[in-house]
Length: 622
View 1 (cartoon, one colour):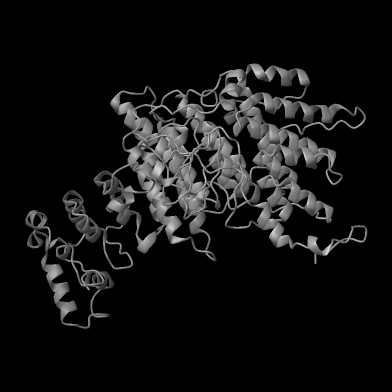
View 2 (view 1 turned 135 degrees about the vertical axis):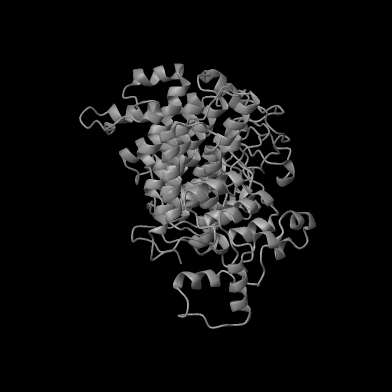
């Protein structure tokens, strides 16, 4: 029986419904299935999106009209925002940045990112129903769970192959935003589920039987959850409820306005709710509720600050870009930097700037979001890895199109080097956790991203001082002695072709002789072994890369060193006749190596009878 307080009416027998069933009913999605996106093709250069949300500076009238009309067939191109933000998978949680949060997992992320619809294809928030360019980050395994498809406005639709999505005739202009999480975050209540799914009638029933509006692990009340997901019916109802304070009403209305800006692209609707909130702040002259004054202005937000008068608020309609900065400021103030939606929408807004060719503004916003993640999340958090990968994808895109003469953008050494330093810092933080060792899979991904960044750095011109700083950073990275999957060292990864597939699309191609050379120059151990006792030379042989094999041998790697299965690098080349003819074992075997092999093959006791240095040499041939 549902517990009731003394003043609450006792429910009739037919009304006795468990909170568990109510919660399940509250999560049932109300919206139609996800619309089918446009076919995908590669991107030659990032087009200027047709919608107002894509390009800063468009008018509110255009933006509102675009959001209100059913979408027309998408042009055969794709905005960069579709490529540079993380995505989802049916087998993995569909959101990039945070640990599972209720307001994030149920509502906002479901509306800002598509729900899983089969397969491992990834999808990204975009500002137009365009195709996906050939630079995309991978983040399917990094996100909180959704379960049901959601229909979103065109700028938020999935940009993945149509065969991965359910086919539907539903117009993509619908603004439904509800989904069911596969994981319930801490502190989840049935009221939160109702708020995020828009189930007003069930919410009224719960409140009738004295359900309390408690906060979740992120400090989110059901009212704030409804504001994040954009369910105006829930917000209108709860702002009039007796359990809601005036401050909570104001925060909810301001947050709902931010949702209208970034998620629904309705600037006039945002102004409506912001105006209501401001009137509530100042309608009582005795107890005016002023906004907290920020200590410093944020460069990533172009030093914008929140408006404090109705006149300033009205003037925002003439500057849509300023409105979008207001939305970011409001969301960060109310939700806080640790909430996943805060960093997500900063990254999304940066991707929109990249669509219009303003890469510097994009980089500044993404750096700010990355700093926010590293300050609030555990080391090697999947969301942080997603941000680092997005940077690698962006820099690769800029360098490739610069080489083709398609873009005037240049990658600054300091920008790329700064991200490499932040990536190394992430590894350093993880390696310091002695009681909780890092996950090898996540560590392996982080190591692969670092190698891609190093590869990109080799394509950027720099001064001698910058070159020294780069090598100093790589040396610091190698001294941490990180190991990834299968106990791979960074040098193992540099000579392995699987390192290429760090995301949905490759940034750099591996095995890479250039990356291998700089790792060895900066102190990488060429005889390091993985869990199968393979040296980097063994892995290079498996990948049939003769250039790297020759380089490693010249650098001191032993061609006749054996792995766990008593195989030498030569043995791994048995089926590659051409390679074996080019690299013959006799040309790389010394008398010392032959002597070590005799000791090993005849089980001669040598420990304590030869110098310790020679003992290690014999072990290489074991």
